[in-house]
Length: 322
Image (cartoon, rainbow, N blue to C red; front, side):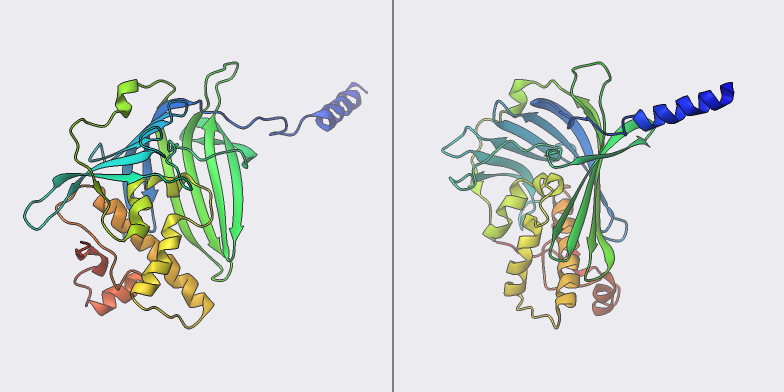
């Protein structure tokens, strides 16, 4: 009799239980923070690319700073400079007479596209709680968003932990994008970011660029300026059409590309996207050589190897972009 009553009580409790995720608020990371991260591009090159970065973010001060490859490249996004803000980039550049000369570039904001501080994390306002899951030994909330544009379906997930019983900001651990192309019927895109050392405090002088800089405008083509000045934007944005995707149109025009079918167009755009990421990420590493986008950028790895006898990867050829 008691067992039956106990079972009945358990059934009532289960029926009245609040489903996991209900009444959860969107995680808040605060208006100021410092965080380290590592971008993982598994589809770029044979072994993929892992790129460390560090972000200082100050929303109320309308500024942020992002360093890549242990400060080899430094970018300062200052919304209060000039009329519509400006991005300053300090980077080593290989020239014909000098290897790794330090150059200073700037990208000015416009009325239509003013410079804003760049967050290290995606905007979670349209994300939905999916589940609780262990990540690297930490019990995390998993927040998910799905976007669809044409044949591209992207799924974004962020693993985050919120301190219980505390007003402290949430702590990010892992971000992942997985892209599925319905026309190709394949998962053809993926990148991940691992976060560490998250802190809600930062020094104010970290946002000030070095004095005495003589800045130049970014070199042509102008379509690449935004991705050169603020590459992290494409990775944490959940827009299905990135700056990298838009550059495919310029590539097709430059190399007079005409594809036989919509399916081939999707395939070529995908190859181009991975090549572009590989080129720009490698160039941010401050190596003794530079990569450039050339005629091979929309080819598969097998096609590249076949056309060069397997001796050299075409997109590793330095291209003069002056």
